[in-house]
Image (cartoon, rainbow, N blue to C red; front, side, top):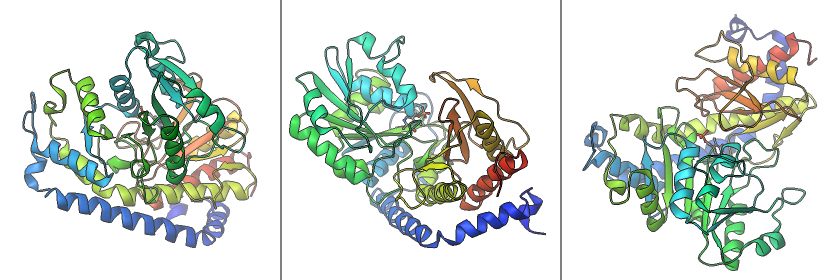
Length: 423
Ligand SMILES: *Cc1c(COP(=O)(O)O)cnc(C)c1O
């Protein structure tokens, strides 16, 4: 008996999947080639910093002289080619890392500019786009946004006009997040940064790098970003990091982030690792291949649903800039069926049914399917989306390619079973 049959995938669904897969061989080879180069990059940084068993020792209390923590931060900085890095379990998630980077480097009277349209949902409250206690707005930091032009092009004239004396920091989101635009290639981000700096040479350019790490050969820090920011329960944690975030970039900016995270005067010198470093190191080591698995899953999902006539973003043939695949399913029922399939495929909590709920930080009801070893980890196979038109699910992750493949087959199985899709 075929293993997929055992797992509840019917013969027609499996056959459909295999047909789609045959056309993806070259794309998968390209993904593997990128993973290979990124693996070299991580290893070189580990060699340079002489990672050894003493780096894995647990520290408690203040965590002074934590060699493992300091070395890990150097490994991140060297991998991403930055002067400094702050990589901590005390950074609780991606939003927290971004809030630190923004809060540390924006002072009352400064203005924050997003030249790429509305930022990720949870940042609306950080910035104060939606009224929120302790937002940057409350502290006197103003915000401006320049929307993308049709075709997701940058509105260079609009951006030039929006950069003023007050513009201190420019935030660029690499990944589409919960929007149905395309994610930006690193090269394109580089052009935008160069343009912003030509308008105002001392403006700080920060990139929200969530979901983008190791998808391409370069990172935004290779093309002029002063800070890149992300979550360890996404790509760079490799599925093993149980918590954490990173900020890599210019030393003066990272110093400020450290003072904001701990306290003025304390900065980077404090922060016990609580025994979490082995998984942070090993996760980073695995991240290039884990990310490649997730990218393969995204491409496969695109190809499957494209063939069935759904709008998918990006299309299966488009080079990847992040691990997210959006599929516009067009109805609440289809969203729920898709998510049921992803849930049923999970190694953990496979027997539960995802139910939409109002999540903190999000405006609309959100449905989430995830059966992860690390709660909410989206480098693990997961699907989610706000329940609002065009009813797009955002599919991401897969610690192994085979699990990602199975998840997509199950999503299709549930749609077929509910007669929402015919093959
Ligand atoms: C996930 C994500 C965030 C926020 O990260 P959390 O860890 O969920 O707080 C911010 N920006 C983008 C683009 C993301 O994908």
